[in-house]
Length: 201
Image (cartoon, rainbow, N blue to C red; front, side, top):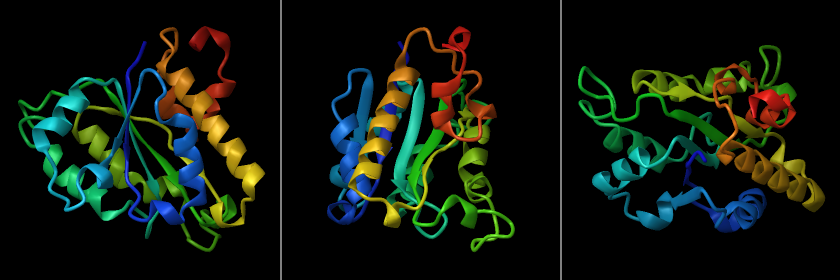
């Protein structure tokens, strides 16, 4: 069974209908470690050995966060800057994360149509996530297709509940011992693993 790590970051969780609902479904799932970065490090003083040990112990690493200003909250950048050290995560001797899978679970206020060349934001969500993809590549990891919840400001309670249930199913599939993760980088969105044929599970 694959071990999944979720590094969660939301600086104003009490104001988020979507992430509160997601956490209600996924926290405490067997085989899924939930690491709340703002709760763990309110002053951004990150425990590097602790975080590196967590990464070494897991096969799939997912950053869950709102899509703030085309990226993640500040602690995500702080975490990347400090934890993914040269000689450990990358460089000639940096092989600690080799072969692992790395990706994002994000919520975006805009609709999917707004993340197109002709849309309001002028680029696809995948283009905005390129720094994360390149980070994975530099650290010898595979970047997975992102899990994206679009248009969160317009979703009602039933929509949010469906999103939370779908994410739970995705995580259950990822941790399944029979699941083959090799197609993950080639999908458009992570939830599409629920549509993969049985032989890849």
